[in-house]
Image (cartoon, rainbow, N blue to C red; front, side, top):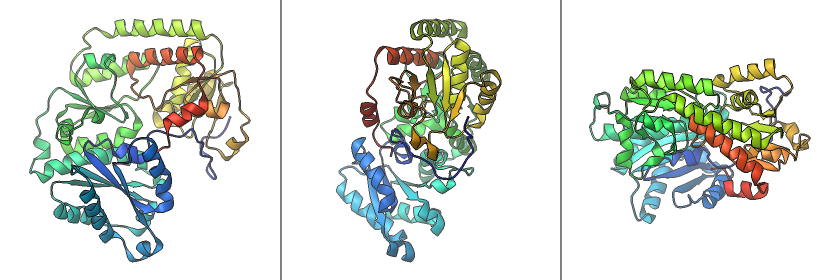
Length: 420
């Protein structure tokens, strides 16, 4: 068992792809990004933007040593002017992503945004940071960028004279933290109409998220956003991180029903029975094959492992770079009830030895698949479109599909693209 708290030199596997800070910032509809930093910081992201189809929405202002010494605030406005001349359609919002060098210099971002707003009326400006030096602080980049996405709503409404605390509320519920909306099959949709940033192509429609009566935080990454929206728009929130434990799901739905004062239209028992059937079917099909769970697949890998073990699956390893607060009880449960399960850090410097290979295994998450060279790969990333009983059913189906159809790992990594 490896310690999940060790620091020092880390290994960054090529299996890390998909959503990063820049891509999360582009969740704002009709927006573009200006990445400000040394060229070495943006090279990887620029290639990722090309590969993932964001080439026309991300622009780069590369800073040299002279810019860093003499200041570069004036370069930002001039760069934006050049960008706007090239675009056929003016963006509604510009998200400025600054690297950690900016934290050391101490740019006055409030003054910068005021200046840009005066110079380019009609555009909402928001600054955010891609600064690994803040990873272990109260505002790590992955949480801050999601908060900054929704800050654009408040900035725009204030610019047009709206009183943010007087916005009337409807019966809709916002989904925060998750990168993508829940599918139409999800039973949560039987409770209320759901809103998610990715639902919108129009910035004006995106601002409707300020009217919702409740925020659901499905991933811990959305917590800062929920806290600020509660202060800004008087929208309460509850944390219901995606879980695959049927009892935890039942408890989460009780919390949601209590928060909105309504019951699920079909009742939770019917949905739970469908999930139980899917579990039995997958277990009978997969059998005792070793299963590895990793934190690229889910925000609560120890919780997923705990659930699968309860259902009878042969979980042998959990791979995680850290453990979240909500996942700590699950880790402790594993230590008490299944001490044989390995805890493994895929970012540890020793990972380059690749001494944990197990070809005949089913990996849940591409990171685990890469480290173990697994033959069977359940292609799941960050609980995308997973929640509740429908999420359990989806997990079981993907595990069965993985067992039925071995995937080419190199091809999967290529499809994920570089993280941006």
